[in-house]
Length: 581
Image (cartoon, rainbow, N blue to C red; front, side):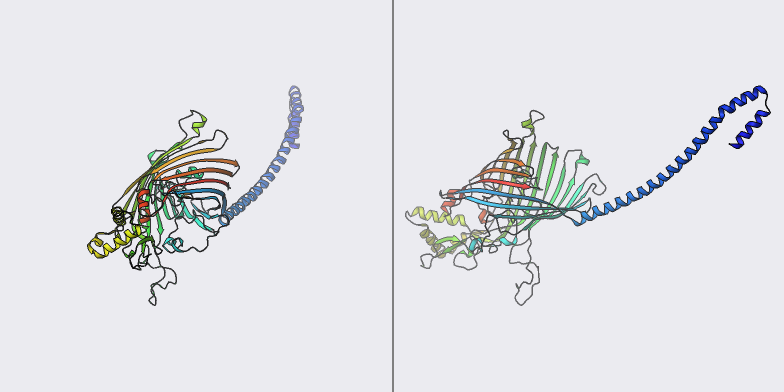
């Protein structure tokens, strides 16, 4: 400022009068401007200093925020790794069950209450790997089954070596594992656009596609028309939608083991000769394995088509009439002969207390199911919220015919012929006469021998089933759903649906006709109820049996002639209340 004033004064003194006036004017004009510039520059310096301080504060704050984010991420990671997410599904049910036998006898339980608890577990250590589990409890009110005797004793006949329905039957108050598996997920298989998953463990294999509608559940992996039972195994799923441009297409390979053949720990099977722990035991059931595939060719959310094929090996069953059933101690078949009049000749057929499961062959199955979730496009709200499905199932037995057996059908035919030829002859007398004839005629006895086969036949037998249903809005409530279902099974129809949630037995397995109607209503958040009525009209026996003699199909009249009185019709009225969170 001083230098500027000196320069200005010097210029004025050496200038002309006009120039001086002009210069003075400039000086008068510029002097305030010089002061303004000086003030502005001073203000700018202070502003810059404040900005610099703010920048330093922001940098420090950013560092603190970054540290907080790092700490928070560590806490989240710690929580994710150290905690399992739990969910609860608790159901209280009332069932009124009724049976009518082929002879017209009636059996019922009109006061059966039960509780079912599912404790659901999930855990994700990474984005690609998750764990899923489910603990289960399912028992009748106030019931803890006592030690059972004879035919019903668990473990006496091989039932304890596989656990297909451990959590579906009403049992005691113990908590059991229903599901426990890990699942790996990836967006690319070997660098392709195929997303894929791999999973091992006790997989979700009950309440599958379509059967889940009436059970008010999300569908599990398999098709409910053919597979509905617990399994330990593996699955590999490959999403094909990106490479085919077809909505929802995928292919899944499934493998399961329904029984593991192994000796017990610390076993004494070899007496003083050690045979080792967990080694193969040739005296009991062999490994029971299953392999199959699920292929979904199309799924756009409204229309879904699912297909499947599987094959099971070494499937179990009972031999109907063991060759040792007459006067021997090694009888492991379903029937035994007794001498009830103590004359030294057997005369009565009774259930064998020592029956035992055997491996009898292989079983194949296939099916195709269609679900339409919303009928039409925008016709009306009712049809938009209506679901319709149709399904077809196929099964085929493949007996290995390794075991010998008496031809039970031929035996019964001979007994019937004797009774017809001799009016007034009792069944006991006919059996006694037949045994005497067979003992006196070795050739006739040899002709009575056959192989055990599967389901009463030594040939491959094919069964079929169709199943249709509709689920629609209940027009008298806002969120209620009403369902109607019908299914039919042929003479040799045999699915793996032993774990179906129906106390009178699997309706899908029925060789005959099954009808069902249900109404499901949410009551409040996470709380719902259902009323369901199931009616099964059997045309053949063996619907709920395994793959041997207990699964042999006979008409009601044939069974009566055989001295049996099988279930002809079954009903189950269920009301439940269910809480899920």
